[in-house]
Amino acid sequence: MPTVLIVDDTLFMRVTVGNMFKEWGFEVVGEASNGREAVELYKELQPDLVTMDITMPVMSGLDAVKEIIPLYPNANIIMVTALGQQRIIVEAIEKGAKDFITKPFEQTQLKMVVDNILGTYEP
Image 1 (cartoon, rainbow, N blue to C red):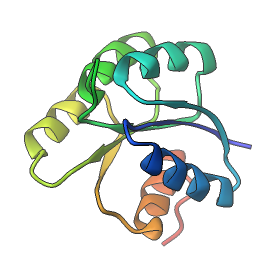
Image 2: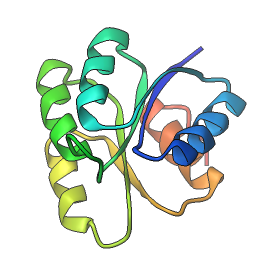
Image 3: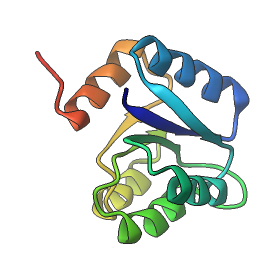
């Protein structure tokens, strides 16, 4: 069963995304509400996949990526962004994030990104 760490500062998004992953057969091994928690949980859990919000208190998702990728270059991180954050997305991808999805998104959009990253996407 693949594992996922969900990082978002809003509980509603963590629950919503977590339910999607559970429906797809993933184990949600952790949730974080800011980038600092995400870095610590990633080190502890080393999940197969991470959904990472960009705008969060304490530490942004971009800064968390900058800390995780040098330690774990094969980390599968999907950035979750609001419209208008293209510059940050480009930087996150350059720093090692695997892909991104823009809020609000449909469940099928996220599933396609996840399958593509984990190599299970079939068009």
